[in-house]
Image (tube, rainbow, N blue to C red):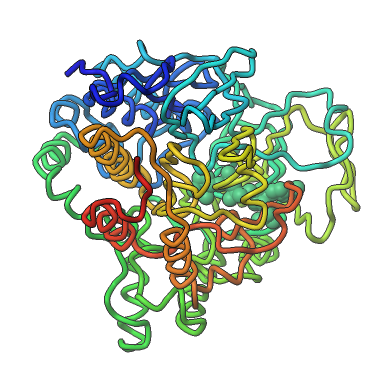
Length: 546
Ligand code: NA7
């Protein structure tokens, strides 16, 4: 299978490039795309900023980092041998195990020989005359390829707050997504955590175990629900191995590729007693069921949403002893599930510990970071360690950090300054021969399932072009418009659209990202796939190919 990309017809005319394809990023999407492109006989190079594979699972080494998707629904599904020889140890694997898994995948498929690490891409410029891409790394080296494939991840550009004095702090400070490779010891230390999203919650419940004093600075509480993780027993392991076809089939059919999917009933179709029993059952079940397996109208009907929010608020009041603290932990400005629901393990009980204190920074904002710690409008605090669990410039941030220029030198960042426009999240008009594996408007949910689909879609397109002797592909404007109309339609009526979050493109720490917009695809994964498959089935008429 070592045929070169170019068919004989194009080989004579196609200008020479260093590679057939350059992939940016060695996370799950970059790894799988490399594997598939090798099967087409392409010469591929992956540039990765880190020192190893794993993407999200390489960077996010903070204490307590783990899956919120069931491990066996998250791993790659494309190789039976891989499924046979990997045993997940827990229903929701911790980060070190996932990173081991991804290194195992890299070994098994001999991926590293086409990867260059410590190689951050600074710029990628389309060359109109040759129809190729020139990629410049931060070290100044330049590399050319016919195809540019971004595998940069939707949540990979970390953002820090813009407090004054951040450089003055004399202790240790870390963003959760830039955690050191060496263990950090919290024993007896005074630790601050700023941020209470999915990452903050995982961090807080872990750090609270050993810190001398943990102070949590919360701006907005989130609705959290029990993860209910446990070790996978030998019997469960056998069941999982035997059920892989059914597990992945289920993931193909559900709304977000999770094992859970909305209950067909609406909230008020059932009696109050049945409702309560159903919510109790969801609260006592592992994983995202209470979020993505709840009544169908929970995320669109405010009254239905209030029922679930009230239920979870009662649970928080039961679990937190100090009722003033419980009230601070109960969200008041958004309903359950309208932002990403952090899954937790005894998170609320942490606030019953004598070494943990919650500070409401809406009431008493952080004014500055000091040499010793930080200062709010009400008090000064001294810390040994400050942890910023402050999230990411989501969806478009990783693109914005690279100087990507398409036809006519047009900058992608400028083109997307009022919101991204794509065709099925994978192509952008005016950026020929560029594919985005997890661009804005791809189905997110249980992400590896979307990664596999998108990689296979791009691979099939390149194979088609290979067979036709084509070397240039561009999204047609009419196709982009039709897709974007669909993206806008899907978001209509969703309660989540009325709330600030990374899912609505808001990040208070990033200039120009204070306004809510339709930043992601909110339809179902099956609907997403149907649209993309239809493009292929109709012979790629939505694309200009030559
Ligand atoms: P999130 O969900 O964006 O959470 C970030 C948290 O940090 C959130 O509580 C923010 O409060 C808080 N934050 C951010 N900036 C500040 C400033 N300047 N001051 C105080 N507090 C701040 O990021 P995560 O990393 O937890 O999760 C991201 C996704 O990764 C997650 O959904 C998973 O899918 C994986 P706010 O709510 O903005 O008031």
